[in-house]
Image (tube, rainbow, N blue to C red; front, side, top):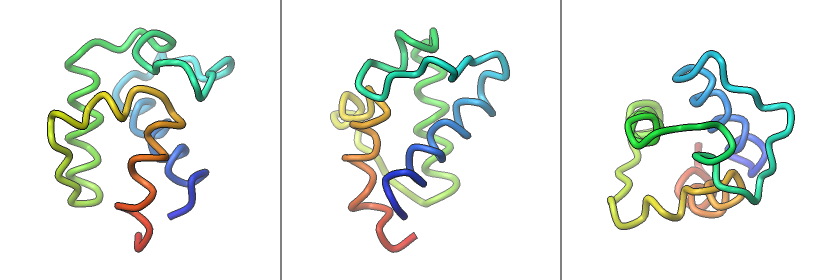
Length: 83
């Protein structure tokens, strides 16, 4: 899976969780939680959806690596390269 596909996947998952999310001015280097007003439950929903869709086990200590769209791609790219 490419970086762009991973970023699209994250945006798709967030859109499924929060129908009102506005991605127009999304900065890939700023925290998603701040830009999209996501709470901790929303963030856990993203992690659970990644587990469900791609059988990924993301340890809790790695959650900070999923803070921005770019950091999500950095973290997930090696895990999803075969997807």
